[in-house]
Length: 132
Length: 125
Image (cartoon, rainbow over all chains, first blue to last red; front, side, top):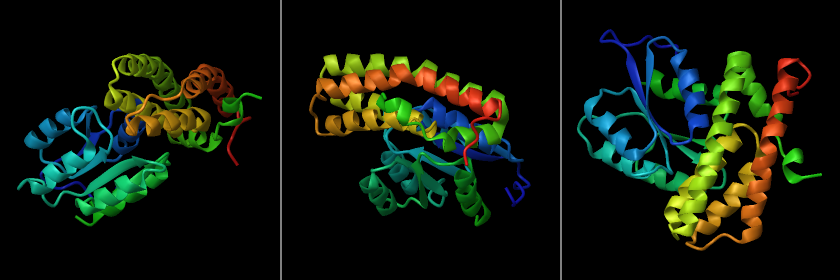
């Protein structure tokens, strides 16, 4: 990332994604950035547990998740004192435009449509993290 | 020609190769090949139990993983099934067979593509 990590330490990014291919790619690419740690949850319940105990710099939420879907996580984060202003990117699949609209209505900052390139992922994450 | 042999978009594998070289490429491909049989079993079990939501999650995960590798044949077959499941209906047998076929062919398709990238013969334009 172009902006340095905060003096307080590492920037933690929550990734809620149940597909291991997407998860490994995102973790691999983001973890190469200095000062970034990715906290991966394979279901929505685990993602909420992480959000309740961690200070986060951003969240990447797949919309279709076991236990609790990404839109429900988004709503919960927007209602929470701790993560109200958290930059949140939704992951969705091609042909799921209705999900994108619902995500924006619930306060998502951006969305990425699968399949995406790692360059696109980084461009969008740069934009979100650098404006913080 | 079978659908999946025609339906690999090499751009995504090339992107992975560029990001992490052969180790990342092989790791990601093996991750997919290890995950997809588990998803197919989960899909079958959910269908047997008429658990449309569970089946849709399995189909959706296959859409995600396959599309990120450029396996457009697998992704299209899984997406057809996913869309039917969101209507809380059982997917037609030919759609399930098409997914099985596409998944069955994926290993060979990926092996060829990976080999091409690693040896420099399969770079995306």
